[in-house]
Length: 330
Image (spheres, rainbow, N blue to C red):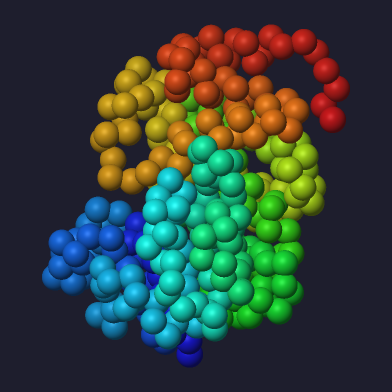
């Protein structure tokens, strides 16, 4: 049994807290808001981010960051990528030498283009760091449905330690040493998921979705390899696996966002309609900049960017992608 701190009370952080408490770990859950801590304690339910799922009474909920991580053997960072720097600045000076710090955030920092592990290392400099990603719809994990993900660290020992301690009977973790690939797979698939939602919103069928996933995976892989990732990582859980889930699930925020936009709803109205962060909106900007920096061709990403930030008609983007010059598949 381990002492585990989950930093972030979103759907994913809450799901991890629930399943890890179910393994008899001592779990604390940090929320930025003292007011929402009271709601969580009173309702025993995360009504904003994970409605309908009961929070076990044994989970200690707090808005005191130092109290949340004190003595933890594992500190799971489950805050959205746009807020990671702010939270890391708050964690400066908190002793974490014995803890394995695990980032489960899926995104890139917009201005710096840093992956989350790079940002974390830059600010709090943990001695032990891992990242976790994969096809992880929060509700399904919390409900105990079978699922799998991958945990990556430069240290085989840390990856295997995290794999052993965070796996449950229904949530299986695989180990990897490709931190770059695991993080980029988790971040970049959100852009393709928005594109999949646009396809759904336009009323297209399975053929279009299959083509989009296949070409999207190639686009993610192309950019990832240029960034230093291993090609095979993108055919695994944090690449293909996460891509399938996020592009098909009715619970996917990114897919749902794209569908709403394709049906004519203004981007800002869709974003305001949910408490949850649609990571792909920030990531499409970062991915586009990273691709230009590395010289990667990312036509789907470019068109998603134009639809969101330049108000391009989604149908025109589809027409553009379908009528690009002919080329070999690989």
